[in-house]
Image (cartoon, rainbow, N blue to C red):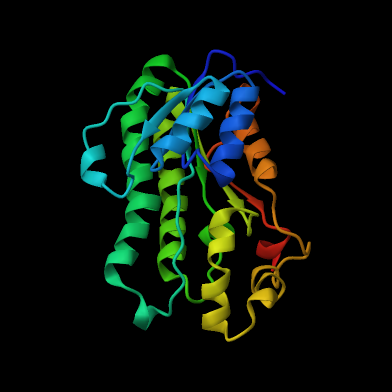
Length: 248
């Protein structure tokens, strides 16, 4: 695949899960990777191993990001969190937090990164969305809302940034084998009234034609391609990796 040598990349939520796989894959392609994560110690450990940098950041504190300036070639908006509740029981502050981390923070990071990308005439923005950016599920109102918003933000960015050599795309996996997915099994079991051991088959994979979880490395391989020169003409797109879920 095309080398990313000489490129600087930021991966949010880069210390674990999909973000870690993306950081490893981009570093393997030659990029200098900045690991942005709430867990500063974990980010530092990953950065040391990959020869990159650590950035301890709370993406829920959007006020602190308002005047940020970023000098990078590749921005991977990956950080996220989940909360499973019926709407009438969904805590308003938790709803707001999910939107801040997964929609407002990506906007602010894109806003911070575009000037330098425009000046160079090159930039790659990859937003790790979800099948829930295209489809809804019950009990995930905040997550679904944030990811649908991220889809719109990505497309608007693509239209504004294209003439400057900057692309913006979404990657839309189904359920990925990560701690984020594992942590919601108990809540899913509770709201659906089923045993925890049945959640993966009866909730997470019920809509998929391929009855397997997505692997983080599979998502990272697509991110790497979208970050490359080969993806020059790909922008404003949403790439599903959901085992056929969104084909329904």
